[in-house]
Image (cartoon, rainbow, N blue to C red):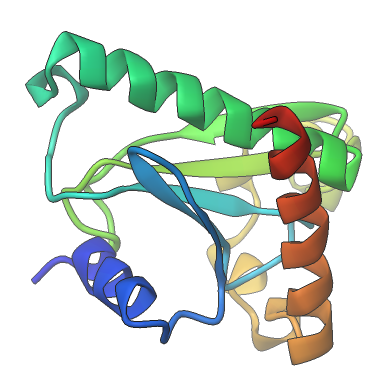
Length: 155
């Protein structure tokens, strides 16, 4: 079972409320939890485990699109810095997908060096707390802001 493949199936049939935009190599979706406001995922369209398993041309296109998504996230949510994560060995499944975290000074409170450090320094129970799930209105606002910036970059 692959959680990412399941999410892609939901997206393809119109049942993923977090879906923002389809690109050539992947789907842009807002993260289910928003401690890092604007947290976004970029899901590779088919079940492939490693970046090196992709044809060189497809890999280059995918990485290019991922950087465009990241730039759009930065612009849409005013990030000071972007963090990129492509692990594939956690809950999401072994499927190429990117976690794009817009970062601001102090966004991990007292868990890092003066509120600075990697996202995994922030306690998982706080990051995935129910109060970090966006309301329907908040989700629509997040999606709208990101889509606007993506569309500008893709013109």
